[in-house]
Image (cartoon, rainbow, N blue to C red; front, top):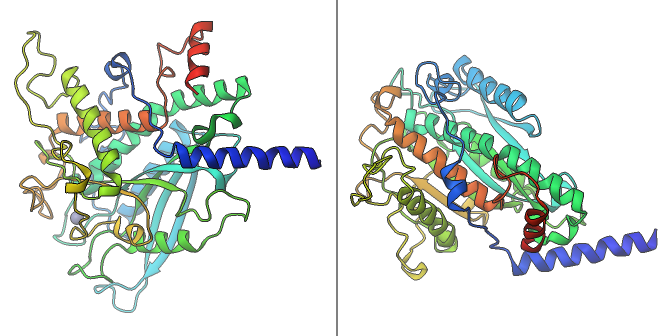
Length: 399
Ligand SMILES: [Zn+2]
């Protein structure tokens, strides 16, 4: 018992060393993998698409529309991603329009960890969007804000799930899970947050209801004393927030020097996917000629050095309560002219009909690729998963 115990402490120390040394571990996908990433097919159809259509309805906190969308998320994970753990985090609050009535807010949380790792030892890539819709104007749908981002995230996690299973099985079979350092303790989670929108006018108390409650709760919940991460909040290795996405020609700025490297990784993927003619919204998509038309990158700040990136806190969004508690944020939000939001923002025009579906699909592919690189899934996608001895050997030395 003493020896076993000592052994596991030794491994824990090794893991911690890996965490310090390789905290930015991130493995590029091959061109072949990028060209064969799963496509959403009809699932983003705004009328009957499996992923997006059920979210394109009013979903004001505490209303039947909100419950229906929560059920949609729950059904999706239960049936399509049964290895994921589902949680709901509940809170209530009065709002400027509810008088003395408490409005319920429900955050939806789904996560998947390596099967051998205990909860407090896993750092998670965290994909986030809000699912509530705005109280006014009446009938507001919020397609870019943020029904489409929710659907993009659903497609991304669905697309990497089988590769994740293969990779973890492989690591278990080789018995080297514990020796793989950080990679063996990397998980992924999805947060669909409630109550992002203000009911009346945006203030610190009338906005971010779900995010404020979750950040506070997670900051105060302690893992076991032996855990690598002290709280669920510190288990967030990157809080990647998608908002206001789905309009054509977005422009995404880099807001935080501490995560500019992740922004650059995402931008690099965008450039590679464009070069491979995988972007449906691009003029070069599927073009038969060898020539390519110049096209601007969505992630326009990639060439800037980290020292030129100023931490912005002027855009209020679900990341704020997490940012204040020291969480690393990658904020992916469209500011077409670098100051304002897309023209449909907070108007009745922000509906399914005004989405640019090729752009929505491109985003879903880009997020898929980013998550796959973060989880180091090269070699584990369909088609390249046949285990030849050579492949096994390559993988082992890569670890
Ligand atoms: Zn909004």
